[in-house]
Image 1 (cartoon, helix red, strand yellow):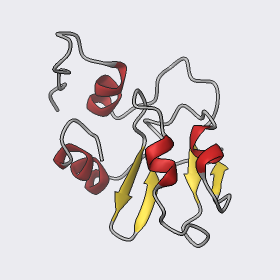
Image 2 (image 1 turned 90 degrees about the horizontal axis):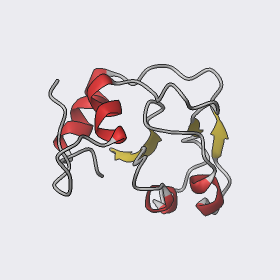
Image 3 (image 1 turned 90 degrees about the vertical axis):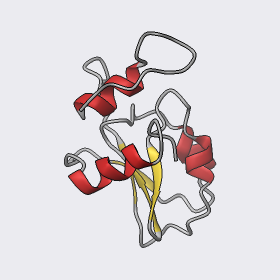
Length: 111
């Protein structure tokens, strides 16, 4: 999978590298977050609140999901969520190929 280059720079961003390698940053000590879909009201507040350098939250059909490989575990999305449906995901699993294809289709991984 080719690494996409940001228009503002000739060097790939850390996020672009994480997308290309489908892996979390080695220096992240916090586990990623997850959204409990049965509690989520799909307001997209978390998606808008996720820092751009991570861009870990995407709409996937009727659900909003956090891509663990892109999530640093920061609390930005938690602070934005009006229904408190975002939790620490100690037992996260790698993102499936279909979601990585969705990320690629959204253009530079932004939703």
